[in-house]
Length: 216
Image (cartoon, rainbow, N blue to C red; front, top):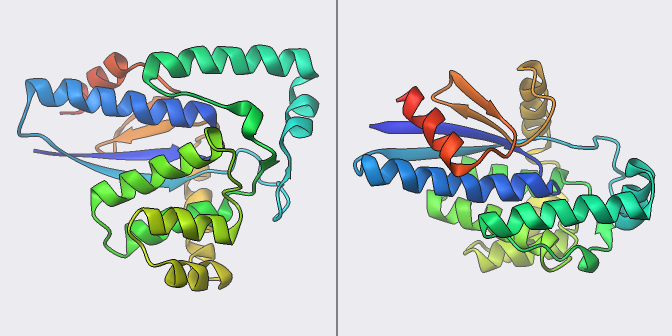
């Protein structure tokens, strides 16, 4: 049996990074009971802040303006870090300088999915983008940085640079964002299982596994 899961996320959302790992935990739980089940994962784009400048913006200043100051940001990041550790995700917020516009990063994932990359390669690319931003402080809105990340995941750097320097993939990604909004998705991560059952938020692996079982 094949199970299709669409994941709506943004690559600068810490809860999406946690949600990705919790989904992997859920898949492992389901496979332990049903070894023959196969999963088809599809990543859908979302913009947490659609008005982010193309060149990005200062990370810390953005957060403090959004959440009301340094104390509030520190408290929120501590909560996220605690949740991350439980899911096997470590955050290094101090390394992040720029909060990027994620259109290019989403285009990179879209390219991998639409050009026949293997599921394991796509999963590795998404993981590496999250790791690059939240653990290494890399600017995942920068073309050269994205090309390096893609090359690490088996792609051709020159092909990725040419793609990102063009307009290719932009209409498709923006169209997908619009379609996701039309579904009523207002926060991420958001999971669509078998095109009919939805789960909102970075739920635990057990909750996600139960939802998958229900969809089965």
